Image 1 (tube, rainbow, N blue to C red):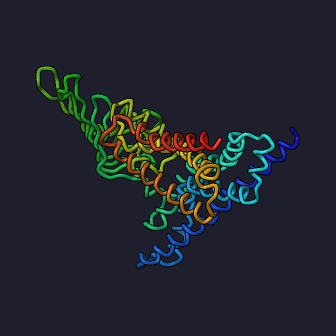
Image 2: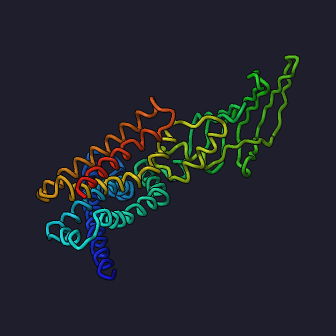
Image 3: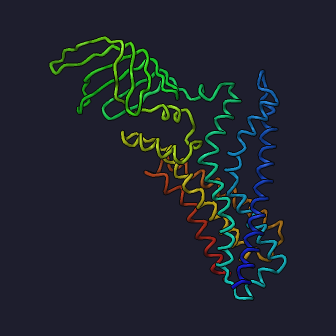
Length: 356
Protein backbone atom coordinates (compact mmCIF):
# COMPACT_ATOMS: atom_id res chain seq x y z
CA UNK A 1 0.00 0.00 0.00
CA UNK A 2 2.83 2.40 0.90
CA UNK A 3 4.61 1.59 -2.39
CA UNK A 4 1.43 2.29 -4.33
CA UNK A 5 1.13 5.70 -2.67
CA UNK A 6 4.67 6.50 -3.75
CA UNK A 7 3.85 5.47 -7.32
CA UNK A 8 0.64 7.52 -7.26
CA UNK A 9 2.54 10.56 -6.01
CA UNK A 10 5.19 10.08 -8.70
CA UNK A 11 2.64 9.84 -11.54
CA UNK A 12 0.63 12.78 -10.22
CA UNK A 13 3.70 14.96 -9.76
CA UNK A 14 5.15 14.10 -13.18
CA UNK A 15 1.95 14.79 -15.10
CA UNK A 16 1.09 17.89 -13.03
CA UNK A 17 4.50 19.46 -13.69
CA UNK A 18 4.15 18.63 -17.39
CA UNK A 19 0.71 20.28 -17.53
CA UNK A 20 1.82 23.38 -15.63
CA UNK A 21 4.98 23.70 -17.71
CA UNK A 22 3.00 23.38 -20.93
CA UNK A 23 0.55 25.99 -19.66
CA UNK A 24 3.31 28.49 -18.93
CA UNK A 25 4.98 27.97 -22.30
CA UNK A 26 1.75 28.22 -24.31
CA UNK A 27 0.58 31.25 -22.31
CA UNK A 28 3.93 32.97 -22.86
CA UNK A 29 3.79 32.31 -26.60
CA UNK A 30 0.20 33.54 -26.75
CA UNK A 31 1.11 36.79 -24.98
CA UNK A 32 4.13 37.29 -27.24
CA UNK A 33 2.26 36.74 -30.49
CA UNK A 34 -0.69 38.83 -29.33
CA UNK A 35 1.65 41.69 -28.49
CA UNK A 36 3.34 41.45 -31.89
CA UNK A 37 -0.09 41.62 -33.48
CA UNK A 38 -1.03 44.67 -31.39
CA UNK A 39 2.06 46.51 -32.60
CA UNK A 40 0.35 46.80 -35.96
CA UNK A 41 -2.53 48.72 -34.31
CA UNK A 42 -0.42 51.50 -32.81
CA UNK A 43 -1.74 54.98 -33.42
CA UNK A 44 -1.93 58.30 -31.63
CA UNK A 45 -1.93 57.85 -27.86
CA UNK A 46 -2.04 54.05 -28.18
CA UNK A 47 1.70 53.34 -28.22
CA UNK A 48 3.88 50.31 -27.59
CA UNK A 49 3.61 50.67 -23.80
CA UNK A 50 -0.19 50.88 -23.91
CA UNK A 51 -0.25 47.85 -26.21
CA UNK A 52 1.88 45.92 -23.72
CA UNK A 53 -0.44 46.84 -20.84
CA UNK A 54 -3.45 45.83 -22.92
CA UNK A 55 -1.93 42.42 -23.70
CA UNK A 56 -0.83 41.81 -20.11
CA UNK A 57 -4.29 42.65 -18.76
CA UNK A 58 -5.71 40.21 -21.32
CA UNK A 59 -3.24 37.45 -20.35
CA UNK A 60 -5.65 35.71 -17.90
CA UNK A 61 -8.19 35.30 -20.69
CA UNK A 62 -5.55 33.80 -22.99
CA UNK A 63 -4.51 31.48 -20.17
CA UNK A 64 -8.11 30.38 -19.60
CA UNK A 65 -8.59 29.59 -23.28
CA UNK A 66 -5.48 27.39 -23.58
CA UNK A 67 -5.97 25.38 -20.38
CA UNK A 68 -7.78 22.44 -22.06
CA UNK A 69 -5.09 22.09 -24.74
CA UNK A 70 -2.39 22.51 -22.07
CA UNK A 71 -3.94 19.65 -20.11
CA UNK A 72 -3.99 17.48 -23.22
CA UNK A 73 -0.40 18.17 -24.26
CA UNK A 74 0.84 18.07 -20.66
CA UNK A 75 -0.75 14.66 -20.10
CA UNK A 76 0.83 13.34 -23.30
CA UNK A 77 4.24 14.69 -22.26
CA UNK A 78 4.03 13.43 -18.69
CA UNK A 79 2.74 9.96 -19.50
CA UNK A 80 5.02 9.83 -22.54
CA UNK A 81 8.04 10.41 -20.33
CA UNK A 82 6.92 7.62 -18.01
CA UNK A 83 6.34 5.33 -20.97
CA UNK A 84 9.75 6.13 -22.50
CA UNK A 85 11.42 5.08 -19.24
CA UNK A 86 9.34 1.87 -19.15
CA UNK A 87 7.81 3.00 -15.87
CA UNK A 88 4.27 2.41 -17.09
CA UNK A 89 5.15 -1.16 -18.05
CA UNK A 90 6.55 -1.78 -14.57
CA UNK A 91 3.41 -0.31 -12.98
CA UNK A 92 1.16 -2.54 -15.04
CA UNK A 93 3.32 -5.58 -14.34
CA UNK A 94 3.12 -4.91 -10.59
CA UNK A 95 -0.67 -5.12 -10.73
CA UNK A 96 -1.65 -1.46 -10.97
CA UNK A 97 -4.69 -1.18 -13.21
CA UNK A 98 -4.82 1.10 -16.22
CA UNK A 99 -7.84 2.95 -14.86
CA UNK A 100 -6.04 3.69 -11.61
CA UNK A 101 -3.20 5.32 -13.53
CA UNK A 102 -5.72 7.31 -15.55
CA UNK A 103 -7.31 8.43 -12.27
CA UNK A 104 -3.95 9.70 -11.03
CA UNK A 105 -3.52 11.72 -14.22
CA UNK A 106 -7.02 13.17 -13.89
CA UNK A 107 -6.15 14.13 -10.32
CA UNK A 108 -3.27 16.19 -11.72
CA UNK A 109 -5.65 17.86 -14.16
CA UNK A 110 -7.86 19.01 -11.28
CA UNK A 111 -5.23 21.69 -10.62
CA UNK A 112 -6.03 23.20 -14.00
CA UNK A 113 -9.76 22.76 -13.39
CA UNK A 114 -9.52 24.81 -10.18
CA UNK A 115 -7.37 27.40 -11.95
CA UNK A 116 -9.88 27.58 -14.80
CA UNK A 117 -12.77 28.23 -12.41
CA UNK A 118 -10.84 30.85 -10.44
CA UNK A 119 -9.91 32.70 -13.62
CA UNK A 120 -13.44 32.71 -15.04
CA UNK A 121 -15.12 33.66 -11.76
CA UNK A 122 -12.85 36.26 -10.18
CA UNK A 123 -9.95 37.27 -12.43
CA UNK A 124 -11.10 37.57 -16.06
CA UNK A 125 -14.13 39.88 -15.49
CA UNK A 126 -11.81 42.39 -13.80
CA UNK A 127 -8.82 42.12 -16.14
CA UNK A 128 -10.98 42.31 -19.27
CA UNK A 129 -12.38 45.64 -18.12
CA UNK A 130 -8.90 46.94 -17.38
CA UNK A 131 -7.69 45.84 -20.83
CA UNK A 132 -10.63 47.51 -22.56
CA UNK A 133 -10.06 50.64 -20.49
CA UNK A 134 -6.44 50.83 -21.70
CA UNK A 135 -7.37 50.39 -25.35
CA UNK A 136 -10.39 52.71 -25.37
CA UNK A 137 -8.72 55.38 -23.18
CA UNK A 138 -11.72 55.43 -20.88
CA UNK A 139 -12.17 54.65 -17.22
CA UNK A 140 -13.90 51.44 -16.15
CA UNK A 141 -16.87 53.48 -14.92
CA UNK A 142 -17.24 55.07 -18.35
CA UNK A 143 -17.14 51.66 -20.01
CA UNK A 144 -20.16 50.49 -18.00
CA UNK A 145 -22.66 52.70 -19.82
CA UNK A 146 -25.20 52.05 -22.58
CA UNK A 147 -27.11 54.27 -24.99
CA UNK A 148 -30.48 53.48 -26.49
CA UNK A 149 -31.29 50.57 -24.17
CA UNK A 150 -34.63 48.71 -24.29
CA UNK A 151 -35.82 46.29 -21.62
CA UNK A 152 -39.08 44.59 -20.74
CA UNK A 153 -40.51 43.76 -17.34
CA UNK A 154 -43.79 41.89 -17.70
CA UNK A 155 -46.27 44.25 -19.40
CA UNK A 156 -43.91 47.20 -19.00
CA UNK A 157 -41.55 48.31 -21.76
CA UNK A 158 -38.73 50.65 -20.81
CA UNK A 159 -36.51 52.74 -23.05
CA UNK A 160 -33.43 54.44 -21.59
CA UNK A 161 -31.43 56.81 -23.74
CA UNK A 162 -28.42 56.63 -21.40
CA UNK A 163 -27.63 54.46 -18.38
CA UNK A 164 -24.45 53.69 -16.47
CA UNK A 165 -23.30 51.25 -13.82
CA UNK A 166 -23.54 53.96 -11.14
CA UNK A 167 -27.33 53.92 -11.38
CA UNK A 168 -27.78 57.15 -13.35
CA UNK A 169 -30.34 57.36 -16.15
CA UNK A 170 -31.19 60.00 -18.74
CA UNK A 171 -34.25 60.43 -20.98
CA UNK A 172 -36.41 57.55 -19.78
CA UNK A 173 -39.67 56.34 -21.30
CA UNK A 174 -41.83 53.80 -19.49
CA UNK A 175 -44.75 52.29 -21.40
CA UNK A 176 -47.29 50.26 -19.42
CA UNK A 177 -49.69 47.90 -21.19
CA UNK A 178 -52.58 45.90 -19.78
CA UNK A 179 -52.92 42.12 -20.12
CA UNK A 180 -54.42 42.57 -23.59
CA UNK A 181 -51.50 44.78 -24.61
CA UNK A 182 -53.62 47.92 -24.70
CA UNK A 183 -51.88 51.13 -23.69
CA UNK A 184 -52.38 51.82 -19.98
CA UNK A 185 -49.97 54.67 -19.35
CA UNK A 186 -46.73 56.40 -20.34
CA UNK A 187 -44.09 57.97 -18.12
CA UNK A 188 -41.28 60.13 -19.48
CA UNK A 189 -38.49 61.58 -17.36
CA UNK A 190 -35.35 63.59 -17.95
CA UNK A 191 -33.24 61.85 -15.30
CA UNK A 192 -33.33 58.86 -12.99
CA UNK A 193 -31.32 57.52 -10.07
CA UNK A 194 -31.09 54.10 -8.44
CA UNK A 195 -32.24 54.03 -4.80
CA UNK A 196 -32.20 50.35 -3.82
CA UNK A 197 -33.26 46.98 -5.20
CA UNK A 198 -36.46 47.50 -7.16
CA UNK A 199 -36.68 51.23 -6.42
CA UNK A 200 -35.74 54.14 -8.69
CA UNK A 201 -36.37 57.88 -8.47
CA UNK A 202 -37.25 59.81 -11.64
CA UNK A 203 -36.86 63.59 -12.08
CA UNK A 204 -38.61 66.04 -14.41
CA UNK A 205 -41.46 63.60 -14.90
CA UNK A 206 -44.43 63.70 -17.21
CA UNK A 207 -47.00 60.96 -16.57
CA UNK A 208 -49.89 60.17 -18.90
CA UNK A 209 -52.59 57.73 -17.78
CA UNK A 210 -55.12 56.28 -20.24
CA UNK A 211 -58.57 55.96 -18.67
CA UNK A 212 -60.98 53.07 -19.43
CA UNK A 213 -63.19 55.42 -21.50
CA UNK A 214 -60.26 56.24 -23.76
CA UNK A 215 -59.49 59.67 -22.36
CA UNK A 216 -56.00 60.51 -21.12
CA UNK A 217 -54.84 62.45 -18.09
CA UNK A 218 -51.41 64.06 -17.99
CA UNK A 219 -49.57 65.11 -14.86
CA UNK A 220 -46.15 66.67 -14.28
CA UNK A 221 -43.93 66.23 -11.25
CA UNK A 222 -40.43 67.14 -10.16
CA UNK A 223 -39.85 63.65 -8.78
CA UNK A 224 -41.62 60.31 -9.01
CA UNK A 225 -40.71 56.94 -7.44
CA UNK A 226 -40.75 54.03 -9.87
CA UNK A 227 -40.63 50.31 -9.18
CA UNK A 228 -38.28 48.68 -11.68
CA UNK A 229 -36.39 45.37 -11.34
CA UNK A 230 -33.53 46.72 -13.46
CA UNK A 231 -30.33 47.22 -11.44
CA UNK A 232 -27.12 49.12 -12.28
CA UNK A 233 -25.12 45.89 -12.32
CA UNK A 234 -27.36 44.56 -15.10
CA UNK A 235 -26.79 47.75 -17.10
CA UNK A 236 -23.06 47.10 -16.75
CA UNK A 237 -23.43 43.48 -17.86
CA UNK A 238 -25.16 44.55 -21.06
CA UNK A 239 -21.97 46.35 -22.11
CA UNK A 240 -19.86 43.19 -21.75
CA UNK A 241 -19.76 40.24 -24.15
CA UNK A 242 -21.52 37.25 -22.52
CA UNK A 243 -18.44 35.01 -22.74
CA UNK A 244 -16.48 37.57 -20.68
CA UNK A 245 -18.91 37.49 -17.76
CA UNK A 246 -18.25 35.29 -14.75
CA UNK A 247 -20.49 32.26 -14.07
CA UNK A 248 -22.13 34.02 -11.10
CA UNK A 249 -22.81 37.13 -13.21
CA UNK A 250 -24.38 34.99 -15.93
CA UNK A 251 -26.58 33.23 -13.39
CA UNK A 252 -27.72 36.53 -11.87
CA UNK A 253 -28.39 38.18 -15.22
CA UNK A 254 -30.21 35.21 -16.76
CA UNK A 255 -32.41 34.88 -13.66
CA UNK A 256 -33.38 38.52 -13.99
CA UNK A 257 -34.13 38.19 -17.69
CA UNK A 258 -35.82 34.79 -17.33
CA UNK A 259 -38.31 36.31 -14.92
CA UNK A 260 -39.55 38.42 -17.82
CA UNK A 261 -39.11 35.73 -20.53
CA UNK A 262 -36.37 37.45 -22.48
CA UNK A 263 -33.15 35.48 -21.95
CA UNK A 264 -30.98 35.75 -25.10
CA UNK A 265 -29.46 32.47 -26.19
CA UNK A 266 -26.02 34.05 -26.29
CA UNK A 267 -26.07 34.29 -22.49
CA UNK A 268 -27.28 30.71 -22.17
CA UNK A 269 -24.52 29.58 -24.50
CA UNK A 270 -21.85 31.44 -22.51
CA UNK A 271 -23.12 29.94 -19.27
CA UNK A 272 -23.14 26.35 -20.54
CA UNK A 273 -19.71 26.78 -22.11
CA UNK A 274 -18.33 27.77 -18.71
CA UNK A 275 -20.11 24.87 -17.02
CA UNK A 276 -18.79 22.44 -19.63
CA UNK A 277 -15.22 23.74 -19.59
CA UNK A 278 -13.97 21.50 -16.70
CA UNK A 279 -15.59 18.44 -18.28
CA UNK A 280 -13.97 19.27 -21.62
CA UNK A 281 -10.58 19.53 -19.94
CA UNK A 282 -11.01 16.12 -18.27
CA UNK A 283 -12.22 14.61 -21.55
CA UNK A 284 -9.04 15.73 -23.30
CA UNK A 285 -6.95 14.23 -20.50
CA UNK A 286 -8.76 10.90 -21.00
CA UNK A 287 -7.99 11.14 -24.73
CA UNK A 288 -4.33 11.82 -23.91
CA UNK A 289 -4.20 8.71 -21.71
CA UNK A 290 -5.77 6.64 -24.49
CA UNK A 291 -3.04 7.83 -26.87
CA UNK A 292 -0.26 6.66 -24.57
CA UNK A 293 -1.81 3.33 -23.64
CA UNK A 294 -3.48 2.74 -26.99
CA UNK A 295 -2.62 3.29 -30.66
CA UNK A 296 0.29 5.72 -30.10
CA UNK A 297 2.21 3.81 -27.45
CA UNK A 298 4.89 2.76 -29.98
CA UNK A 299 5.19 6.18 -31.63
CA UNK A 300 7.76 8.88 -30.97
CA UNK A 301 7.09 11.79 -28.63
CA UNK A 302 7.06 14.25 -31.52
CA UNK A 303 4.37 12.30 -33.34
CA UNK A 304 2.29 12.08 -30.16
CA UNK A 305 2.51 15.83 -29.69
CA UNK A 306 1.40 16.53 -33.25
CA UNK A 307 -1.60 14.24 -32.90
CA UNK A 308 -2.43 15.73 -29.50
CA UNK A 309 -2.23 19.27 -30.89
CA UNK A 310 -4.51 18.49 -33.83
CA UNK A 311 -6.93 16.68 -31.53
CA UNK A 312 -7.08 19.62 -29.13
CA UNK A 313 -7.57 22.16 -31.90
CA UNK A 314 -10.18 19.95 -33.57
CA UNK A 315 -12.09 19.66 -30.29
CA UNK A 316 -11.87 23.42 -29.70
CA UNK A 317 -13.17 24.35 -33.15
CA UNK A 318 -15.87 21.67 -33.12
CA UNK A 319 -17.17 22.83 -29.76
CA UNK A 320 -17.07 26.45 -30.90
CA UNK A 321 -18.92 25.64 -34.14
CA UNK A 322 -21.59 23.53 -32.46
CA UNK A 323 -22.04 26.14 -29.75
CA UNK A 324 -22.94 28.85 -32.22
CA UNK A 325 -24.97 26.40 -34.32
CA UNK A 326 -27.08 25.76 -31.22
CA UNK A 327 -28.22 29.39 -31.33
CA UNK A 328 -30.15 28.48 -34.46
CA UNK A 329 -30.93 24.78 -34.32
CA UNK A 330 -31.35 23.87 -30.64
CA UNK A 331 -33.83 24.97 -27.96
CA UNK A 332 -30.99 24.82 -25.44
CA UNK A 333 -27.26 25.35 -26.19
CA UNK A 334 -26.40 22.77 -23.51
CA UNK A 335 -27.08 19.90 -25.93
CA UNK A 336 -24.57 21.08 -28.53
CA UNK A 337 -21.99 22.25 -25.97
CA UNK A 338 -21.78 18.85 -24.26
CA UNK A 339 -21.96 16.80 -27.47
CA UNK A 340 -18.21 17.04 -28.34
CA UNK A 341 -17.31 16.34 -24.70
CA UNK A 342 -19.44 13.19 -24.60
CA UNK A 343 -17.88 12.12 -27.91
CA UNK A 344 -14.36 12.61 -26.52
CA UNK A 345 -15.17 10.64 -23.38
CA UNK A 346 -16.65 7.85 -25.50
CA UNK A 347 -13.65 7.64 -27.84
CA UNK A 348 -11.13 7.83 -25.00
CA UNK A 349 -13.00 5.26 -22.93
CA UNK A 350 -13.24 2.89 -25.88
CA UNK A 351 -9.51 3.11 -26.66
CA UNK A 352 -8.60 2.62 -23.00
CA UNK A 353 -10.94 -0.36 -22.75
CA UNK A 354 -9.23 -1.95 -25.74
CA UNK A 355 -5.78 -1.27 -24.26
CA UNK A 356 -6.76 -2.82 -20.94
